[in-house]
Amino acid sequence: MIIFTTVGTSLLDHAAKDKLGENKDQLRNQRASNCDCPLYKRIKRVITEGYSTSKKQNAACAELSCIEKIKERYPQAKPTVRLLCSDSAESRLCGEIIKQWLDARRIVCNAPQVIEGLVVDRKDLFEKVGMPKLYHALRDEQKKLYRNDLNTPQDPCVVYNINGGYKAAIPFLTVFAQMTCAPIFYVFEDSDELLQVPQMPVKVDYAALLPHREFLLKLREGETKHHELQEYAGQHGAYETFLQNCIVQDPDLPMLNAMGELFLDELKQVVYQIRFYEWNNDKHKQKQLKEAAKRIANALFLQNNCIPNNMNDLLNHAPETNRREGGFYISKQQGPSLLRLAYTFEEVVKTIAVHDFLFVNAGHDGYVDDFIENVPWQIVANRSREAEYQEDYIANKEDATL
Image 1 (cartoon, rainbow, N blue to C red):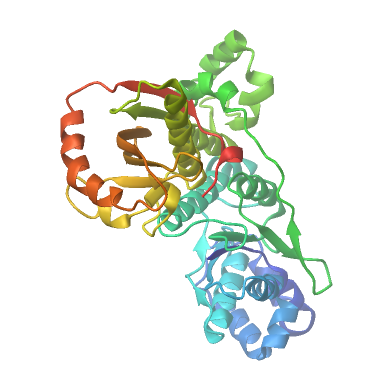
Image 2: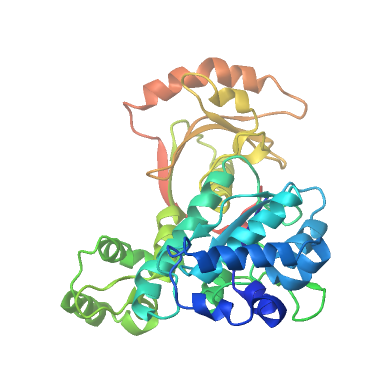
């Protein structure tokens, strides 16, 4: 479990009252790269020596207190803390001290990650550089993590500790966490209680966004001039309702903001092409096959298109089938039909190709060996022929199960 922790400067604020005096203010408005000066090192030494016990450290540092509470909430988890620091000497200093204290408690913690451009004194740098880089740091880490673990409310892969950090970044973090079903925690004000932000039934209207996909890609690549943005908005009537909220309004070269990057990445994932290279003439069974493939698509969408390496009935029932040449996955679906599908998944083009399927009887386990014997050569043969049935499907997280 990853605990993403935004790092603020409350530790310095607390220490300033009785240990730092006026020294603390001398770091204000300094970038994170300015960390080799004698003052930086002196403040770090004063704080680490002055807060020598866990009790004192938790009282002085809101981020640390929240991490300990999250550990208590998930006692079976093995957490790794990811410290996300703003582009300031103060935040970086606090991140380094928090890591030092976590190391002493034998809590795994990566080196603090400074998010370039995440500043408070330049709105343009914050929007164009800081927030997009923060988004990609979160997205890249979650995608790697989901390849090996399932994300469930009882045992989440990712949680967010938002006790510290720039307040301007917290709304975006909340939206991102809600869209990826990740719990969000903070310790309530001056109390010792851990509060969780309730998971809302967030749903993006992907069908409405889909027509704008190509235009959003052009914006991401920096290929759109301001007048082109105005013309596009006028033609589609989308400027006020959608585009305005996803774009940094640069008079020379408009670009996607962090929210636009989030929506575009979600949009890139959401449309799946389902192909059946084996089919059935019975209309009732055709319906069952379509529904089974859509369940796979929904589950893939929920897992950020990462099929778990460990066994999972819906996505990877028999992991050994993908550890050989001509590898494939088996989806074991429950219900009256006891349907089993042998499929491959091409992540780049979001294609689910079903090469074989079987309606089995209860207690029948021989299908795995049958699939292993027959499916690899079917995959080779299917590369040169048309699918017997195919459709595009917009995945739906609300209908997804794992």
